[in-house]
Length: 244
Length: 244
DNA sequence: GCAAAAGTGTTCGGAGTACACCCATGT
DNA sequence: ACATGGGTGTACTCCGAACACTTTTGC
Image (cartoon, rainbow over the protein chains, first blue to last red):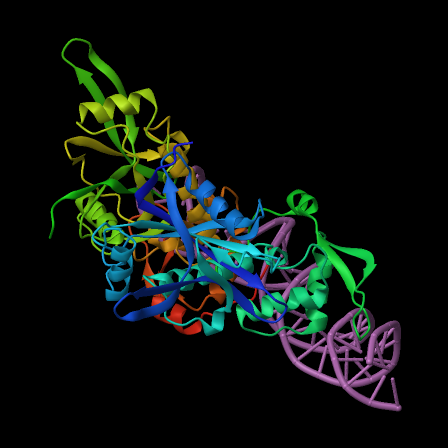
């Protein structure tokens, strides 16, 4: 493999995680300090990296995800590309690039991917920087155009959630209906009636009820369900709910 | 404006047009010949171009569309980005790039846009090359990875058509219900019952019937309709038809 | 008058929506 | 026994699907 990174092409991964309560996104610290002044600024960025000369963008995104989580085959989707001429032009960003020996005048095309992660386990350090889950609702001002990228990722992910079964990518393999409902409610910022939600899920043959229950919960244990991609592929009807 | 083109960044526009009968796509001839051998090969490409140093990708796509049609404010949407290391590596493509004094080893990131065009009027020549409408169903092998880009554009456009009102972007401002139905039928490759289709449209308040009829048709003239973006924005209900 | 497309109504089954109470478990 | 979330049914409305004939125009 050719180990040179392409200086003008990067991928940014918007990694979403769900803790049964909030939607979180994976961010890394960005701290700029120097000898004389000490701390110059401190903020956060999305996870991203440049692409190798002979690497596809999907492979680059998978590589980043693997470095962060040790997982292969994470749910990952290219959603939009960002290349505004001024996207690296804020003062902090210029200083950061210069201190990193990169040229702030170099226009960088960044291809945005979003990932859905069931496991909360991620590395705590990545390229020497701290990695952490931050609730999407509490994300502050980010580096570069990363707030924009996050907003677009959210939009794409919501739209996908409305039209395709991806919710369980944010849940363990076996999950309860309340957990599933919560995913929709939190991400779409709405609420559903429990009975109606369950009737709807019951109609989806690919949501398979198991003969298994939750353990160690201090209330009536819930039945567990699994998603069957197999049944989904075989029974999905192609189209026809056109127009909002 | 800085008039240098970025050599590693291009936009490709998949321009769709509808002639009340078929879905067409705008392609340009690509002919390579030389003194000794005469014609070396001849095929077609999508419309595309490199981006200027200080130009956004949307502006570049709009610029291409304007050059082709003389129209501003064409319906245009970024759908996917293509940057496979081998995307320019077919023998014909390498020869073409060399004869055009470009470096076939240069990896080019191409951001794909699709455009929907109501008018069939386009320029017949663009950068000295012939431009023509080709029925999507009859597109042969294209240059570079342009067949792939076309397929992805179709996929994105179909999905959008199913979930958002964009069909009339392919029709004149005033159109008949049969024309509208035909757009859906052709693009989604299906048929609809005329009565059910009309009942459905009648429920969409933003499809406004006019007090105006078709002229010069040798059958009962149909009522004309318009799309009202205004009513659409005010009455669209936000979500909730989740999962296929 | 004929060819061509426009326009129109009913029935049935299934899905969306609104709504309130009892159940199983851990502490 | 109590707190916590799990789990269930009914009534009403609206939508999707299936289906065939009459009307208006140009030629």
